[in-house]
Length: 183
Image (cartoon, rainbow, N blue to C red):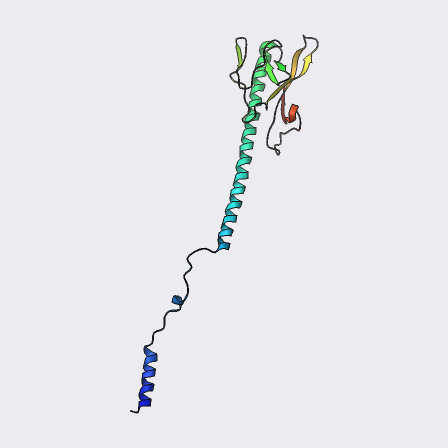
């Protein structure tokens, strides 16, 4: 065999025996996230945290407002019990909005026992969840024929939720917006 044929035969053999690497070995393996991917994830998390915080604060406001409303109703029941025993409603301290047993007695602090003489009308007058002066008691009408005794009153509180259906703008002093009147 001539040399040229032999060399051609070697070239063909070499081609047949040559192994090519798989195409996947030529690509780089990705080891991390890109900056844009990280920014997108961080912004999505920030939006979720902001909406959860808003919902949590709104739920807390509604809870505190519910407590204020039930507190005012409880004081209303105590005042009705006082009326049944005394034939008149309790006196007011006009400067602080606190309840008095009579005109000569000191005002009863919110959070203290509503006791007049030996009769306890309420174990503890409620106290606002955050503010110290949210509740306010006010005598609205006095009987001119009976020693000027209180015959009508108004209890008011400051509620936080602006969308509350029972909110009444400025029904009490200092912007109090939830009021209950004697029945």
